[in-house]
Length: 201
Length: 160
Image 1: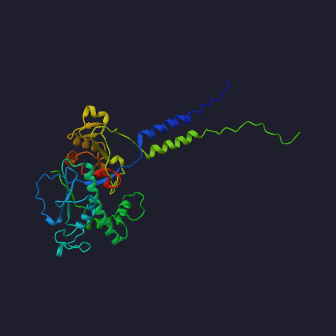
Image 2: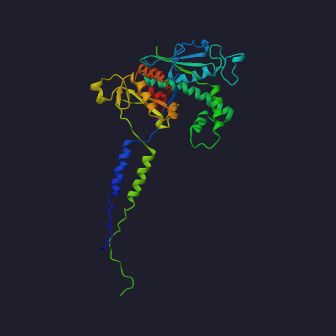
Image 3: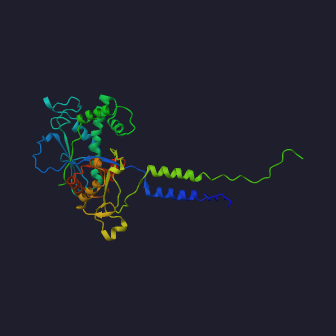
């Protein structure tokens, strides 16, 4: 029997099929990555431990009430002033002796914090507070920490703290990761983020 | 007889489209690699608040999503306008959160389990009471790493 060449398959509509698949993937998938404020929740202690006693001057109470009003240390404050007020509180450095803070640049008022290591920001809210407002306030508090950390990182290593963190999280980072981690640790110890989110009243 | 015969005019030659499928396949593979499947459809209103002090959530397979907000308009007739929690594709009550976290943990490889982050995608008009309840449940489930997912922008925009 004579051997016949296999007939050629018409591939003209291949492109259409591929386009169809492409459009399907375009519609059903997402490309954007999410970003947000990362926080760590405190673990639940079964044993009712006595909370450590904090000096009143080392606590910075920020309250967002149900109408969205902002109260800082029991006084009304405008939202735009919150960042500076938090920076002033953390950077006050009013401690003496063991509690002195040699890198703080604040005026050292006796009614404000001793040392950034001791300073705690307590963020309180009502059950009816709007989530958007709560996030806005939280964002300002984190910003205050970042401003101070940037300042110290610039003083010690000539680089922004946020830049160091970005480099550390970048998988294609070329330099010495352990060294970078150590530097980040140093800055974090100078201004530890002690931001307590209380349960609503 | 002239040496140079004029070619007969056949119009413009057709461009070969034989490699078109290859090009499209290339595009297709590109999109398949860089994107992820959208795994749940939203049943709640989800306008995220703005923030600018943000960190990126890169490893998508290590994130558990919890949505909250009032039901979308087409579900409002059945479910009202009270803010609700959505887990996977369903509305859920606050008691389901712990179970959801457990199931999500089970589905991941063992060495990755403590690297899981919970992303809270909460509508900006929601009351903090609901968010606090979720946070409390997450503490009970020992899922302590959370991320308030936000849009990039000035925080002051949330106040209007």
